[in-house]
Image 1 (tube, one colour):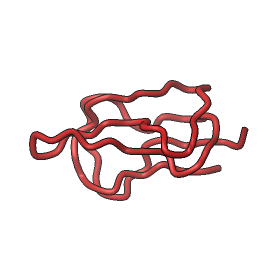
Image 2 (cartoon, helix red, strand yellow):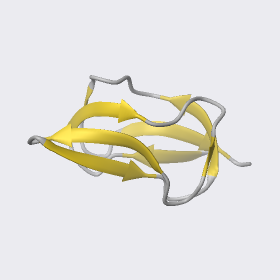
Image 3 (tube, helix red, strand yellow):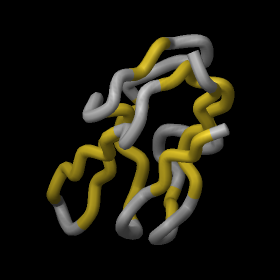
Image 4 (cartoon, one colour):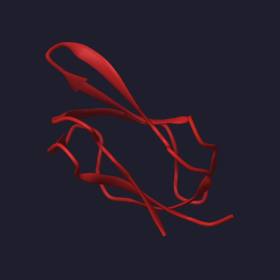
Length: 72
């Protein structure tokens, strides 16, 4: 199981994947909004989206788990 975490605090502006989607390393999966800027969060490894831990509009803290991936 692999986790995609945020590197900074902010609001979840847009979730770009759904449960069951195949994700590639480097693919943008979530866009955060912080200080009026859009900050993309990318997957560090490939996998299949097993669980999305946040909702659009929610606030997340630094290093919070956004998405859990399972191996392909």
